[in-house]
Length: 230
Image (cartoon, rainbow, N blue to C red):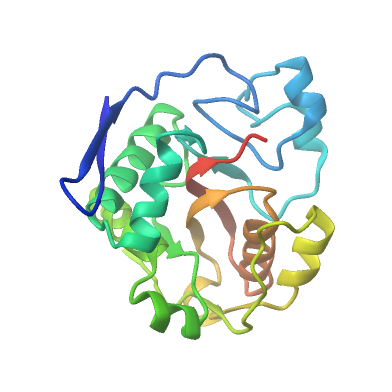
């Protein structure tokens, strides 16, 4: 059972819900592998020790794994948005704690090694506007619980991009091209755990992970709060 808060004009709303999966496949919980393969979803194949369904494994991805404890649906949508847009920072603790529980449940090797925790960065203009980076807040919790080093400067967003909402998969990929830069002095030779809030088509994590790979990262595992299933 998990609990988190959505602020309101009056008394805040507290949500409590179970994260017990309905079934095991690359679409549903407990482990979600990217991108969301329609073939794998139709066949309902579970993620084995190689990770994900055969269709997902056949794709040439720059990361080895994506773990997300929840589907991006009610009430998780409200809780993530409350963190990002209403400053409900307590939700970051809930999200980070649940990520760690999920990784341990899936026996993810990424946290068992001397891994480097890297949050998905915001562009400086967006960071000034929001006042904080929600992925960094979640990454702080993960690094503390697992006693791993947090490298908030390991990946930077160097180009401001248009909002991804409403764009096709191809448009999202083009929109993000060249958006990131990684510090090879920090990430080269490291096993990186890349922390994000929500993964939709996978375009952002693919571009970010590819940038980390190009800077010499040994491996990348993506840990997200939730995965959009639509």
